[in-house]
Amino acid sequence: MTNNNIIYDNRILDVSLIPDRVALDSASLEDERIHVRWKCPEHVGYISVDRLRETADYVSQPSVCSRKTIPELCQSSVTISSETVIDYHDLVDQTARADAICLLYRMLLQNGSAIISEMPTVSGTVKTFVETVLQLPVQRTIYGEVFDVISTPDPINVAYSDAELKPHIDLAYYESPPGLQLLHSLRFDDMVKGGESVLVDGFFAAEELRRVRPEYFRLLSTVPVTFEKIHYDRKWPVHMTYRRPHIAVNGAQQITALFWAPQFEGPLFAPLEQMSAYYEAYKTFSKLIDTCSSRREFRLAPGQMIIFNNRRMLHGRKAFNDGGEGSRHFQGCYVNIDEFKSQALVTLMQHNKYPSVLPHVGNQSC
Image: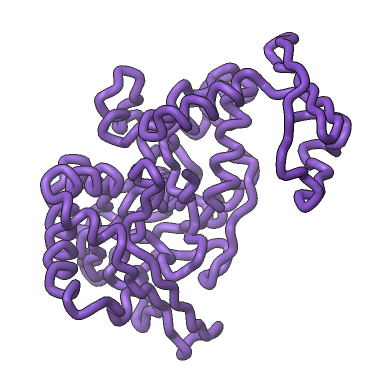
């Protein structure tokens, strides 16, 4: 509701003074807004018709609100192909930028990922891209603002080795894990064998689990799991733990977030009678992720950059061998999930391309 007791988008309101019984005096429609006059106490304001319709739809059909599940989006004719590649030059060219940035945000909202081609293979480009192309701040983490994914002799993270990385989300031990992750290929020599990137739509995999084993889905959406990063032997010692279920759902049982990172799990604190069933569900979901139809493997060539929703898409890589002299060097950074969603919707609204269906982006909003 809007009235004179608002400064920008903030209401000046003392909730404790609202009467137990509030009575409506009159209401009339004016320019797609409902003009409302209340009594006890006397108060005048406006309610957007769109906002009222959205609220009414949710109250009457909470499971059919303005968001759809990932499988429904994948079957939609408006879904953009996950094979679409966006040219970096279109994103920085003033003539082509509007269409290119809208396509990028629509891909990230609908498909959960996008590939940018023709990027300069210059260190620091990934951070510049976030700040100038996406016009967003980089999210600082325990790995700094920009991190190098390259095999090192004494890695502080398995990602900084040549070992296989099973699909996972990053920083699941944070209360608010990063939203977008960007990985920019600076160097990927031909002599490097293996090292293909792996991407799996985690929401899609979770929906498939719900379809084939609904009792396992219920377990993974109710039993809290411990995610942890306890590492004192590093420049900035870290002791972080967070407990929550792998799958977050709202009141309509729609998936609103996914937390899957077996590499960073601690002890399971659960009733003894749930243990056996939980681990069966856990293994079943892991196998499903490895065989899911949404799984993609690709070699990220130098000058290419993958952007994906870290709250929805599980990422990993195949083990690799650099041949003694070769190198596989990516540079990455993160963006906050809520800032990404806000910028995407503002940009699409400004260009009259606001999505008619908005999927959950993984920020646990109902």
